Image 1 (cartoon, rainbow, N blue to C red):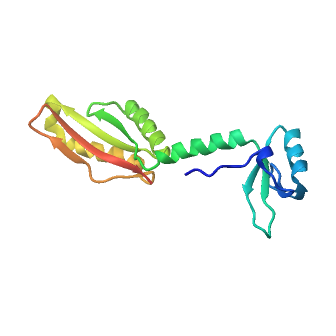
Image 2 (tube, one colour):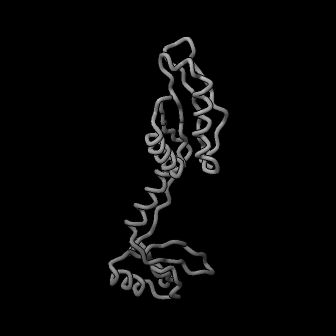
Image 3 (cartoon, one colour):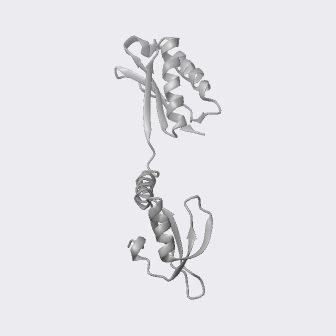
Length: 173
């Protein structure tokens, strides 16, 4: 259940402790003075702590619409935080060095964004005969990501089918 926030005229106390937009305590002021200060700046007076019989309520001058927007944005972002995002990058045994450099740059970009990357090599047709050599090349390309990502030993799958894949998952460090 969402707690309602008191804004502007909804705040009905004789005095409040006022916090300014730069988060500095202004002090105790009558509520009508705090409200007029907020209006002069084109902002809202928002109750942030209702107080107690011994303490005055705390109000802050801020743009409530902007604060609400950022709270909702963070809420949506955090809702997806538990989901692991995977990106896939594949190359072939015959991929040239320059193309690998481009693919590695893209992988580094993904890893900086904390994505997990499924990284694989595909062997098609006659190239299936070179599985061990391809695995050595694949492991050599993984060394590019030392200290940036962690991975497990690459797995080889396929064999009798048309293709053989060598794959691992790079996880950001």
